[in-house]
Length: 155
Image (tube, rainbow, N blue to C red; front, side, top):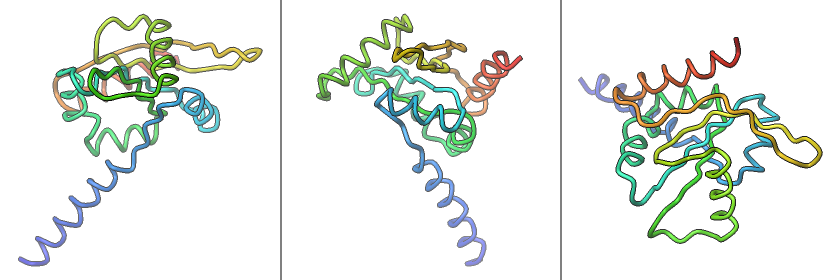
């Protein structure tokens, strides 16, 4: 019985550790560098982290799950673009996030855009691959939709 409990504890613990290893970039320029090096598209998560109920739900039901962590590590560069109401942010980060919100025409939260970025003559251009938001059904349903967006662009 102790061996079963210990094995279960180790397995569940490894999922928790794996989920915590995700890196969410907040600096778009750094994220673009990582994207170029890894040849992975950007996942741009537009969120209102301290006030948006659907954003918090997406975080809890999908983005903080081990299934998402495993998929994300292999497929995308994660970028969080936050629009909090109560949490102070640096002015340069606010400016960056607002400019990207305008560029991607984000009108509601959560919005998740998949994009490739290229730097042409010192100017960043984004190729929009597709977007999604909250999807009921947990990480499996959300990942299935994300895979479809990314697969459509590869065709």
